[in-house]
Length: 316
Image (tube, rainbow, N blue to C red; front, side, top):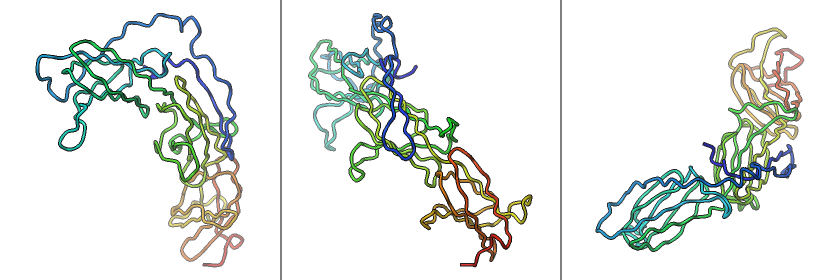
């Protein structure tokens, strides 16, 4: 069951390489008016798993549910509820009394004061409650939405998803951002509090990196497709145009300003490079060869450096 089956709107954005802004289409309705007006089915409360045993005979019942917004229907799945005692234990921590997972939850508790904590992915809410010998029902508003990240090439082609990852940070200046989630794979829906987040997308491990600020709205799923202007490059050192790549070759890829972008050893090194101009340098035994190349966005290429006098350079 999809976590955001009750989300009312969906925003889609495209981030263009070299830009930190968004070109976003307006939100569209995820449910029509008829569906929105349908009656909500009675809640089914999951029983709690108690950590601390229930002592005494005087107890009350606590019924909990969570909503993305005040207007949203209760979440049917994805919640983790924890009930803590209100008084710290000998270790200075609040004792964990009971846990429940799913959607709405039911707890049988001794009368007294408790701290409620409900987590929905990275979004959470907490509250303090005094429980007597009665049934108390509480609904918690998470003010949360979802973020789903993908990537594409300029011509609409597919990226190599195994080489794609996203880091999600808090918004703000670069020195003030905090990492929330590292190495998020494409296509996964991340549950977050409503707000603006800074997303860093890495395609490969060299220099194909795009940054963007994305807005997550409460009760909505934001889908962002990052456009990477990059391509995969395979390097070969050969003795002739149709020759086999030479083993034990040390490679360096140098940018236009002279900095070394990447280094590899092998006959068939592969790497994803941002579109641009580079010099590839191959060292095999005591011989060094180089070739200038241009990487075009979305066009994977095999670069064959011929080990001849034309490409030879002085040993360094």
